[in-house]
Length: 372
Image 1 (cartoon, rainbow, N blue to C red):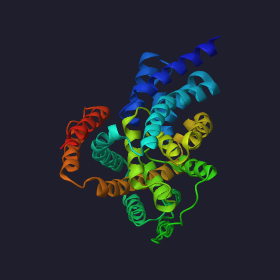
Image 2 (cartoon, rainbow, N blue to C red):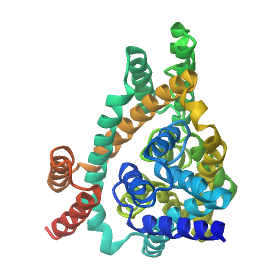
Image 3 (tube, helix red, strand yellow):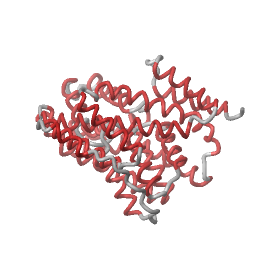
């Protein structure tokens, strides 16, 4: 009976958090800490911090993985599954509704001006994340070398997944002291775009599964991966469609990776949404299940720390590149620039404002300016 009660408690808690978790991963994790440590006392704050640290050692969305960790700690394997599912579910459903309207009308007429307002602020939020992560990630000149190499390579078209993996390998070489060999993993050779490939469900599933397996750093890096795979290589989406998916992912509660639901629906209706969503979140469940029992050992591993240091630097560089490319397409008139400046003021100077309110304000601004 206690196990069922624990499972019910886990399910209801993370379903609630799934509906109210605006503001990005850091805000989500703070909400969870208040619920599971301060209010419910499921485990100590020290152990919670250990779990937070562990999520940085594996790919995937940090806040979703924290939900999965907490569910496992409280209610075992079923808790792991139910916590993750309940946290993701509200975001997926809400995003799916937006995706239906978008595909039905080839746009979201009532929300076009709203998205117009959100997009500049999305770029500012990404820039803020780049600055914050960069301060922690660029710890020495070797990591600066890796970051700059990734940034230049990504800007000129080198595959993001390859760059993340190359950065990780370079980090391992740093751990073993073979610093002189780092540069060999970053040949500045541009990868040519593949010809347009006919859509298939299996290909869609594989793309999102692959991204879910290598998505270090932040959910924002997702945009760089999707731009490379779906816009640049396969031409299944236009960049405008991807930007709209990003805006929806930002505007809805829960993990930003719910943008995969929106994209999957545009490509193949309900089946595409299910395939993309399942594929991108599945690795997080597997990684947490494997990692949780090993948290204490991994925390003490110098090699794992070096690998993640390098991967985090690469992730920050990719985020910077995607912010640049999005900015080039978004800041095209005085209205978008004005919204962006106002967003930057809120993000960088009024730091206590929840991201949800900044995005909401940008949406209202876009709607009002849309009449001008």
